[in-house]
Structures are given as C-alpha cells and as structure tokens.
Amino acid sequence: MSNRVALIGAGAMGSAIGTRLAETGNHLVVFDLDPEKVQALVDKGAKAAATAADAASTTDYVILSLNSPAIVRRAVFGEAGVAAGAKPGTLIIDMSSIDPDATKQLAADASERDLRWVDSPLSGGAPKALVGQLTLMAGGTAEDVADAHAVLQHVASNYTHMGPVGSGQTTKLINQVLCGLGFLAVAEATQLALDAGVDAAKIPQALKGGRADSAILQEYMPRFVAKDYRRTGRIDNMVKDLNGAQDLARRTNTAMPLTAICAEVHRMLTAAGLGGEDQAALMEFFRGPNKENLQ
Image (cartoon, rainbow, N blue to C red; front, side, top):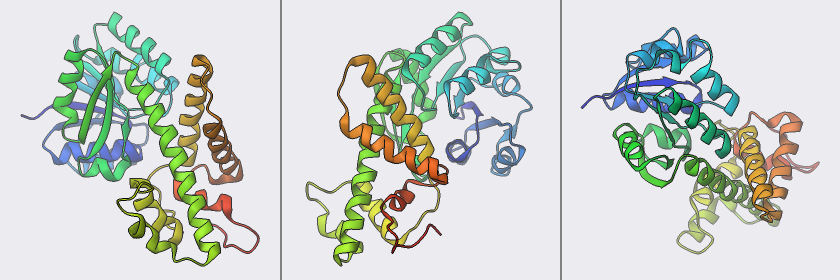
C-alpha cells in the first residue's frame, strides 16, 4: 500500500529519507526553502509543494527533517506551516534531532490542533537511510508509534518505541554521546597508530569481533587513515547534539566529564571553520606542524 507522505526539509538527511520513500513506492510531496533540493527529489518521483501547508494538505503523514526546535516550530505552526494545511488526525513524524522538552511542547501544541506527534530521531546517517537500514528511536503513544511504522519501515531496520513523546529525543542524545565519544576515540587511536608506524588500515580487521570493535571503528578508521572527508554528516550538528546532552545532564545532575571534553573538541573544530565538515575531519584536531592540512 502506498502511503501519502509529506517531507518538510530536504537537506542531506531529508534528501536520503525522501529518496528511499520515493523508491519504495510511497506518494511523496516535498517542501524545502531551497528549490534545487526539492527538484532533486522531484526527479526521483516526488511532487513539489509551494508551502509546508500545501504539502500537508494532501497527505496523511508529515515527516520533518530540520535542524532546530525553532525551525521545527516555524515549519509546523508558522505562516503557511504544516498546521495550516493538515487535516485533523494527521500524524507528524519529527525525525529532526532536537531538545526533548521542546518536543513535548511542540507535541502539546499540535494536539490542540488535532494533530498527532511522534518524535523519531535517527542513527545511521544518509548512507543507511538510502538502503532502509536506519536505527530509529520513537517517542509517542503506542498507537501513533505503530502507525508511524507504516512509513518508517521503508527507511529503518531497527525501530524501537522508547516511551511517551520526547523519549525518542532523549534516546538520541544518549546515542550521540556514544557516537561522539566513539568518533573521537577512534580518531585519537588512528593518529597514535600512524605516529607509531603501525599500518592503521589493518587495525579494523585485526580487532574485528573483539571488545574494541564497533561500527565506527570499521567505517571510520579507514576514512581517518585516508583523510576521506566526504560529507555524510556535520561536526557542528554533533556540537548541537552534545550541547543538548550536556543541558540534559545539568537538569538531571549527571556527571559527564568525557562528554564535556568531546564537546569542547567539536567546538574547537567548529571555531576553526570545520563545522561543516564530516566527523572524519576530527583528524585535524590531531594534526601537528608536520602533518598534512585539510584537503
């Protein structure tokens, strides 16, 4: 059965989600402020909408892939936003990574307009979205989370209901703590291997299946070695997520010393102009005077 889905936000992640939904037979309507991003999905079978309200008016599900609570609020409740066009009962699936408390308020405001809300942030990035293998952590009522799965099953191989609205976003913050620390640890270990004269390209295979193994080790150590900085994510987005984790830690009085260090490294790289680069550019933090510049 073809689902009628509106996609609001066609950046790197939204584009991958939209591509997969179009390829798996869903009726996709897309809105983004950048016409070129919209056109790229139109070329793959989507239909363009003039506004978010127009996109929502002909669909049963609205997927949001945006960068901040303020942008999400504007896209949903602003002029010509989703709420202005969506019919009662429309399910909004927010795949953005934003603050759990902001999510709870957005969901409450949506409920007042007879709109349903599921927060379903993701892990796996654009490459996993394109092959339908995202990991999704969902927050909302059991009924709404099950309904959202009718669409999300096309982009995800692991879909877990974590609890009420906001629980998905909280889980995503925990995910980002683990990922941020993992990226930094693998980058640091890569540089040590290079400086010590070990063939770092062989390390992922050598450690495969051991306690030090991880998806980040297997994917990113070869990229760190090769200085493969092609963009599948952004360092400044990790800053946003680690900031969110630290905000949550302050509210819960949770000590997170390693996260603090990791966040500072990401902030330093962002301040140095590398915020738009992929996590692979973490190697630049370890670049001394005798090491190559970012290419």
